[in-house]
Length: 238
Image (cartoon, rainbow, N blue to C red; front, side, top):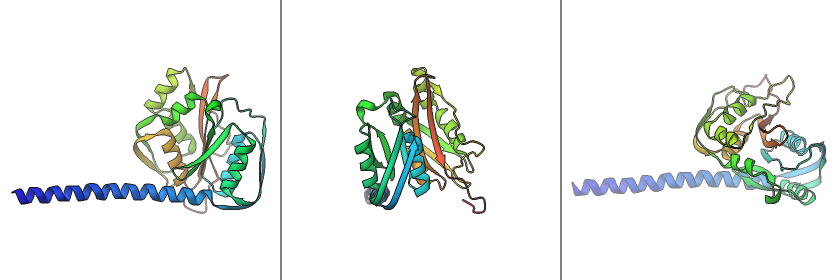
């Protein structure tokens, strides 16, 4: 009986360390992917757009770069932003942007480029929203970006934060007649995950949606959490 108990204890320890090693290996793989992303070589990049959202949406969708963007509290949508790099790495490009626009900084997180305001320019409500933990969240196959955004902002944990500050979801849609999609075979089912981690996971794994952004509109008292995606090639199953 004692031998059996000892054997079971050994099996339990092996399984515990095996599971820990698996998690560590998965996290290491994501970290390596992020490092590879930062040193990705770029040539002849010249993008000029009105608003930081338009700038990084174009970079993300044109070059297939997963980007998360938290917009600074006093960012002016009429400002013109420029990305200009003859030859270099993505790290070079982003460092150049941060040097020219002192309110922003960047990092690689979850295998995604995250661009966000420095502390003095950050909206504390957006910061709190991105850090809130959602107990259970899922998205079925063949969902639109709009459906995902609606589900995420309707999560109990997110609604609680919005209501506590007297805010609501903006519900704005800038896609025109086309409704951006996540991919016909893309689905998501997660538990106990932060909003920011969920957003990073989606744009890292979706074949179409490559950038998320979050912004607060002080005048209307609304918050916008949105994904931008390239148009789906209907001749190819995603």
